[in-house]
Amino acid sequence: MSFPLFLARRFYRARSSGGKRSSSAPAVFVATFGVAVGLAVMLVAVAVAKGFQQEVRHKITGFGSHIEVLDMASFQSPEDFPIVASSTFLDSLRRLPTVTHLQRVSQKMGILKTNEQFSAIGLKGVGEDFDATFMKSALVAGEWPQFSDTASTNAIVISKRLATQMGLAVGVRVYAYFFEDVVKMRRFTISGIYDTNLSQFDDVFVFTDRYTVNALNGWQRDACSQVEVVTKDFDHSQDVLPAFHTFLRCHTDAGGMQPVAMSIRQDPRAASTFQWIDLLDFDIVVVLVLMLLVAGFTMVSGLLILILERVQTIGVLKAVGATNLQLRSVFLWLAAMIIGRGMIIGNVLGLGLIFVQHQWSPITLDPASYYVEQVPVSLSLGWWAALNAGTLMLTLAALLLPSYAVSRVQPAKAIRFE
Image (cartoon, rainbow, N blue to C red; front, side, top):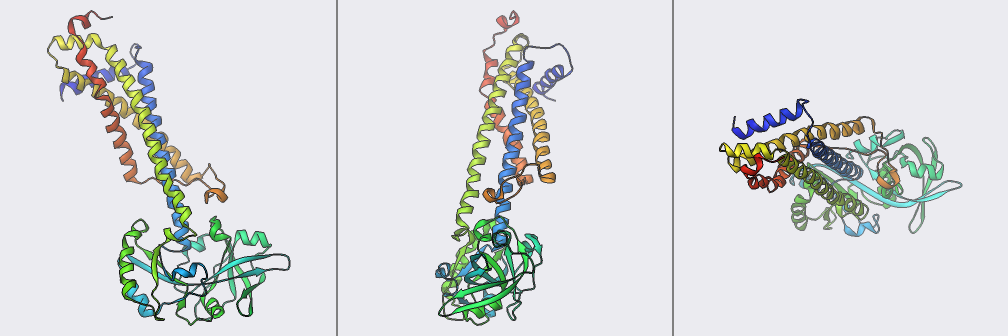
């Protein structure tokens, strides 16, 4: 064991053994408390921010996909600009990098009407290829039907917002009207009610089978408003977009049209939400900087007081041959032990709060404003390790300059210091 580490351990044990109180005790307590609170706040802030990002992204991509292949004009009128996604066209798309799932979706704008209420809707037709895992988890009443693109079910799944607004419930029959050259009417039975808390979707979309929507639009079976593509990793879905652009420049659909590909981030219905959750990264940086400043300031104060308290010891050690570098190392080791103690407390406090929120969700939110009913938390092992390592290294780095105070201690004066 090196001399600086040995001496630092003796100093630290002397402070922790319950011996006589010293003038530096309050400063050391504040320094430990500052590191503990700083690390705990950083852990909770990162967990909450990442939890929000993951939860909202999961909802948006669960409702739709990672990448959309479509005619851009379909945003204004989805029933007027179809693409013909034949099995050959879909097989070619599946061979693109990281693609894991494809699903065809057809849309039709219309009005849902009861005797007392009516509401504009976007009828979203899906078939057997639709991954309904997320939508099934979002059901609050009823069930998800087995939708098809070869037969009509006359069943719909509506949002809780729409059901409340119009006074509808599972099992109720309701009429929908669609306006073109002639008015088309369909009677549907409500099979299920979902709630995602995404108002831009819940206020509009009603699910039914793709066969019915294609019949209303006068389309053939392979036609659809868009092909939704799910990739292996949403965070890297932007990286594979160039491969989609290259493919689509060289291929047309079965109808001779040349569709385009875009990320769900570019979808006008979701872009503002993604911008909001991306701003959380900036909030994380602000919290980390502030908490590191707090931890660093309290540790600098504590180190200077520790050095001042042991001026006589420093003078004696210098008198017997200890170098400035060795003495600086002693106090840096001592500071590292104090930081380590604060980090242990901070981890227990921060991870404890995260665990409590994850298990029991005592802190709730207004889903109309935040898209979720409880504060979501998510902290990966990588983030935990980075926060702990960063706190230790940056706080110690901040102590390098104050540790030079040891060099200014003169043995002759220090031994007589009181």
